[in-house]
Length: 175
Image 1 (cartoon, rainbow, N blue to C red):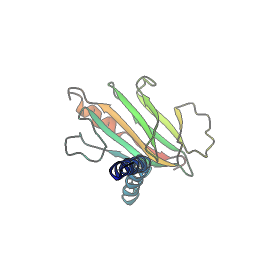
Image 2 (cartoon, helix red, strand yellow; image 1 turned 120 degrees about the vertical axis):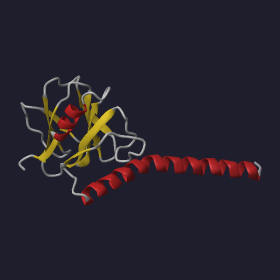
Image 3 (spheres, one colour; image 1 turned 180 degrees about the horizontal axis):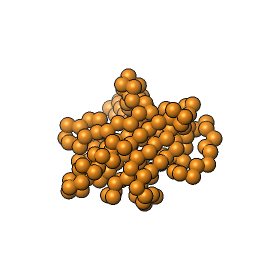
Image 4 (cartoon, one colour; image 1 turned 135 degrees about the vertical axis):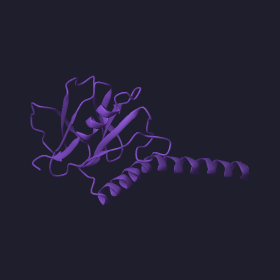
């Protein structure tokens, strides 16, 4: 085998190793960075609202200009989190992301068609109790992110969507 072919082969192997390392470590680093920023701003287990996304928006990864975003970072190490909100008449979804950024659950208008939504989020070491007034979601990690999306459509219902966004609450059980 010539030295050129050996060098090309080594470069391909090293590139493959670097690529695998990046795709396995990057999600954890990104989640750690978001979690650190949320902790510094005291935004854990507290709802946040975002304005309409545009080309300069960096708070949500790959935002859509057709959606209005809200949510909360969570830490359910010791107590479950109760997420409650009013629901719009248009498309909406509440997605749950674990600490490694995996989307492990989504609740949307196909699951619930009422006017209000209540979700009990438990940690991986919890024993969820039976609830009669909402959904139970069990997170595979103690920390993560809840993201609520609302469809804007033609924008005629902005006031309603912003009012609904303001009703989003994330509180620890018993707080």
